[in-house]
Length: 308
Ligand SMILES: NC(=O)c1ccc[n+]([C@@H]2O[C@H](COP(=O)([O-])OP(=O)(O)OC[C@H]3O[C@@H](n4cnc5c(N)ncnc54)[C@H](OP(=O)(O)O)[C@@H]3O)[C@@H](O)[C@H]2O)c1
Image (tube, rainbow, N blue to C red; front, top):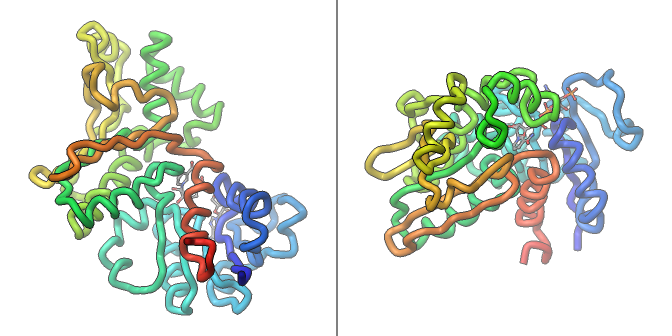
């Protein structure tokens, strides 16, 4: 079995976990040979000290077979990925914003690009949806796709608290970013449902046409009113063949498959014309779960017996 040489762009929450997973479970098949970061002067684990290089050098390096892009954002990630693909390297990314905004262009670009971790982190929803879409006409997709907002809504109900103190606490616990806009205002969920909708429909969704409401205005009173009617408030991302995509807080009845998905968990319910309903649930955020999906893509893309 030949050893695949991995170049990691980004060594934050996800990048460090990918490195750890490779070192722990995949060292026989993969070796991290280059690492690119934003600030090379930041203190790092001694193990990667000798591997540091510039991202532009990494994507062209003859010592890298497969590039893992976990720096996030649109630019320069897009240019780096295209350069790596043009150089004949396999690419794995967790970058939901990039895939949602450039789906058609990236699919047409050619080369081996995988992005399982971009939606649902450790939940293999992309793979399952692609498989279903080969045999079914996918009718609808409904998901809790953002762990931060789900944690906040769950805690508001469980502890009868307003949003602000729970948000502060989730930032302290590392569940919410210092700037929580992308999660709280529904952008993160929008990118993810746009990717799932694109796979289901076969073409990129126009993000400007996706109705998006976050939970930034959510009150304890609204949470309580839903509970009084036997319902739970969830930030639900939906795509349907008829109505397109939207992200909206919804009061779900308790017998709905997504109503009891609490805390940082994510879940996705898919309906096809022959497969009436399939729900996947699991850890939808965090370094280790995301690394699990990224490394699944690494193994699947490896030109060896590993993927069989
Ligand atoms: N965190 C999650 O739970 C999760 C789940 C699913 C998907 N994702 C996706 O995974 C990606 C990474 O997320 P994260 O949470 O790991 O972010 P993060 O902790 O902020 O890490 C980002 C990394 O990228 C590096 N970086 C920034 N600019 C760079 C540049 N120009 N060249 C090379 N490296 C650069 C940073 O360098 P420094 O270390 O020097 O700052 C840092 O190491 C994002 O696309 C995110 O949406 C994250």
